[in-house]
Image 1 (tube, helix red, strand yellow):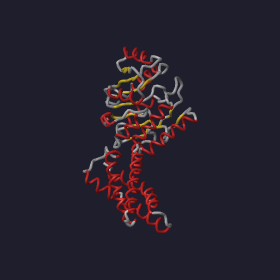
Image 2 (tube, rainbow, N blue to C red):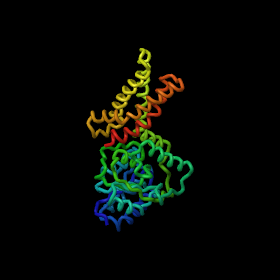
Image 3 (cartoon, rainbow, N blue to C red):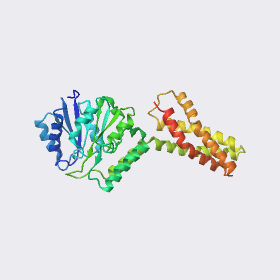
Length: 351
């Protein structure tokens, strides 16, 4: 038996065919594992009147709570509203379409004895999907891969796009969350990078009733969400601006008669300071544990290898291949970018 109160959050939209049976199945699974629980259904004014079914059940079952919203505002915001209005410390998030099997809920809850977040994963050992079309497989795998590459904070789980997971409410800073899109687990992991996470394998089942909610709008919202939260993309944008600063200053100094070696060194340091300022204000604005002067000095020290890479690539290409110094500098900047990001992320804004 688990002594923490458990809140099951279920966002719904046109789930009248499933919701009654699902509530009964969840209660059956919880009865032998949890002393105190509630099932919080958040409905966005479903045209099929899902909310009427839930409301009728709630009048005879004090474990069931209905939150009725007047319009469709998105999956993540529905989950977030349910979490805010729940009274349990253990939160379980799941869909109402039976693609998330209720029998896995006790295992997710049990896993929180030693972890902050338990993710029901399709992609860990023992997990799988059933009934996915080729299109759905491409979208799912592509979204997962994109998230892992662009937002490394979510790599603690094999399935950061899962909509079926549990977490301890007191371990997560809910005030940080941005409820854009339809994958709130992604947002929780990104905004709370120190969470201890465990994967629980499960089989993502084929939907038996109703229609899938995944459409072009949801895919677009996910892409926007990843781009907004990707430090790699932000770092790349600033790197591109820094490249313009670097090459612009080098061009001006060379045009004034300064030897290109000196012009290169001055341009590199100027762009380093420029990049630091923008990264500190934007890319890593939430990771400022060290004093400003310490961050500046560490950044200069850490990106030193990147600066050296830029300079020597420029020297090599200019002197051996007779490439124009500005072009050599640009190619050196490309080589230095990866070194710069990895060292900045791990050594300067790593608290």
